[in-house]
Length: 253
Image (cartoon, rainbow, N blue to C red; front, side):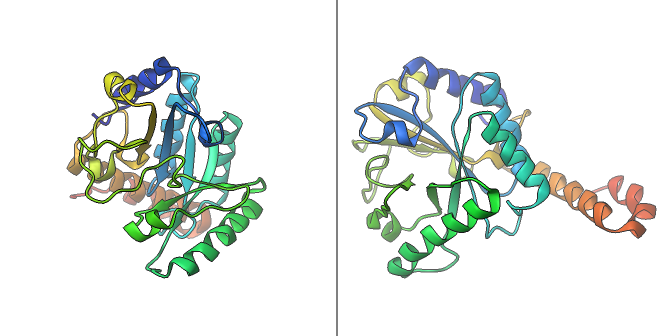
């Protein structure tokens, strides 16, 4: 369920619904299907997944963190990928991480500051955000700002306690968190049965092969290992003599 071929089927179902919209177009609309991606660990997988959408003449919204230990959105390589995604019609937003903060008023102040920093560093306006692993208090806070859209504001997301697959909500929300489709799989029928739908994927869990959760993590760690080797080689001239040794190492995990 997590291969690019599986994802193509989801995108086709969204397109066939005739309701595909990004957040600005969905605002105030009676019907929409929003596709959103929170970028957690792998910019490369996010970029490759965005190309799947581009091949299908489809665009969505990609939210990047900049307090993430796994990638730097402002590095040259990542910025180049982000620029290419934006050039292909995708929207770039902020994936805001609370980083342990629990005071909702502090969070309310931090979000626009991070949007401003991200806009400055990327060189274009970033005015949409999602919250990383939002607690109930952050969802209930329904953060709204002039000229800014929150993926979890009540126009796009219905907050309720104890939600199950059968809970009737104004907005149907489907997420692949933890490699499990929570609240329903985005089949054609499941999409068409609801007037308003928001679908969230985490691109690090998707690849051409469509691994299960364990094998996906193994492949992801191997990719990050090779990425680190290349990064060291780019910066350290004396590393070249060890390059082949590390690249060809038998990784046992």
